[in-house]
Length: 139
Image (cartoon, rainbow, N blue to C red; front, side, top):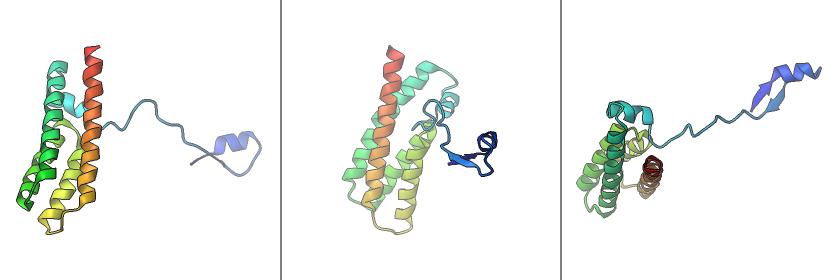
């Protein structure tokens, strides 16, 4: 909570009164950094949509491969690919989740099912965001 000292003084009070911080307008926590993606696609909206479509398909494929991986090497390869592709389009949250899982495996930690579940949630959030962008562009 923020303290609105000015408001307290206007009421003649000595102590500051806690008030809730105003929420920012719009969605400031998108699963994809659209400024980054715009730079990657040289500001071309058509290319941006095509890259989003391709990433959406690719991320689903590589997440599916994660689920069916039978060796640590397979897991590492799929995590690394997902991490790089996500970072390339600006899906930095997803890239970070993949990076953490990859690092843990490389350091010898056992597979953490919660990390894989978190990756699934992130892939689905990114996919839903992409779907909204594509539908908005078609409207």
